[in-house]
Length: 417
Ligand code: SER
Image (cartoon, rainbow, N blue to C red; front, side, top):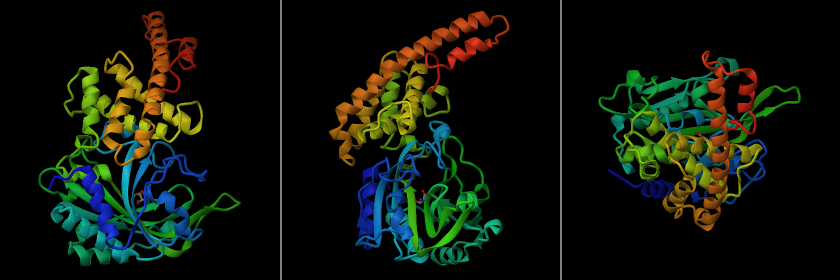
């Protein structure tokens, strides 16, 4: 069953192309003309105005593999990155979209067919969730989705699980198109246990993991002059789905961690070589750091390729923070000289075929990464020296006095790490 991530991506796009979908290239990570979003955080972002009816295109069905970043705003995964088997700052989202064309039935039937017949996932390792309604918003449970799943999967009721607003009502940000969703989850590990559905997967990825989210776009949320949010129906119901390429590849490659897939393992291995330490795929600090490096190198390479450079404000600040986090983890792994550029070059080697902008800006990516690291290592060394001095003065209480603590947070110290 093992399929490379390139095959997984191609199979997804081909499947929907054969069902009348236009294959659309990934939009940039920096959404053009959208001040509500810092980064593209889902496949639907480039189609936002098609859902709301503000824009029309010659096609009413589309499919894409979209590069995404989730670091800031509503969908923020930063603190989980490297710790869990499945969170990333950068990832690719496979999706199919209907702009007022098909709705719940075709979305559900197609998703099930692709997962179980084409990719060949075992049905007994899957469960689905549906929106269970929310009284405070005046939203009813999605009985239609439940009935469709029952027909398509023949699952008993307990394998079609009701979930609330937080999990099964999707919105891009505080405003924009939104709607109830239904998700498909996969059980990693030994005997399938549906009663464990609400437990978080273990840090090494055992348990239930969401694979695919099918959103039934029915509303637009907007903010009135009084500051209150309201939900209004869209002109036509639409479909927006998203499946993380890393997660689908992981399952199809028989792994429990995305970091074991062909998308990320080579980066982890390079981090291991650079640090001279073995990678043992555990929760040990060194292993977490190597996974952070693998993840953050992808975000760094892709953002620089789009002309975002590490600076002090807005998106540039977010990139700088990610780069400095990576450098700090590299530092704690004992890597003595600049390394981040080497990881970014590995990203180019791994993903350049799919994303030619990486190859075109290869030198720029490496140069910007190295320059930032040289600069930041000086800050880090200075900050660590200040910390050492402050610790000496703090003896024997171990408490750093206010002034010294303040200095550590200034631009000469550790701020913005
Ligand atoms: N927009 C939805 C999500 O991000 C489905 O693509 O999960």
